[in-house]
Amino acid sequence: MNDVELICEGAAENMDKQYEQVRRFHAAFGAPVAEAPTMASRGEGEAAAEAGRATEELAGRMKAASLQGQGGRALARASWMTEEIGEFLAAETVEDQADALIDLMYFALGTFVEMGVEPERLFEIVHAANMAKLGPDGKPIYNEQGKVAKPAGWQAPEPLLIAEIERQKETAKA
Image (cartoon, rainbow, N blue to C red; front, top):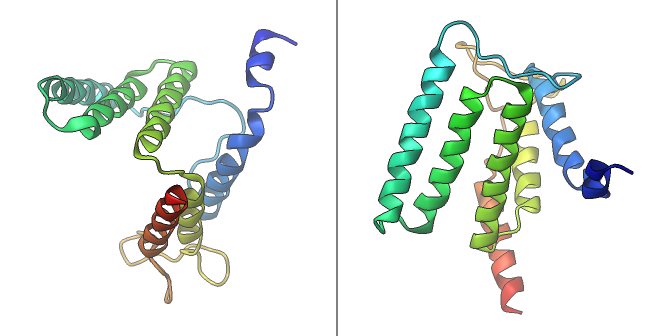
């Protein structure tokens, strides 16, 4: 077993479920699905690189405000996540993009840890609400502008998210 295999042993099953759920969502709604590691397209011109620089500048301003005691932990954590988005946009390789996304995920999960919120059930709730946007035939419904429309009877996930967080609060008290 090599070093990567040792580090990652048993880890795949933990994230593969959510990855496959999002993959199914992409396939159902016609979003890109790559079959092999592929760099996310930045299109023509400098727009992505400029956005990356602007995002990193915003992250710097957020960090500066945070260091001055403004915005609390929420601003500090948001600045770190924003910085990773800037790095993703500026990345020149698929490896650099993946590194920025993993760092972003790590900061996002760390924020859940700081909040004491377990995200798995919340993810399931949001995923179910997103997949419920498919019509009865299993295909997306689009409005006249080409945006995915919510079918009749679709329910927003927020009430279930609130209930799940309340459940977690009650469990923590016990």
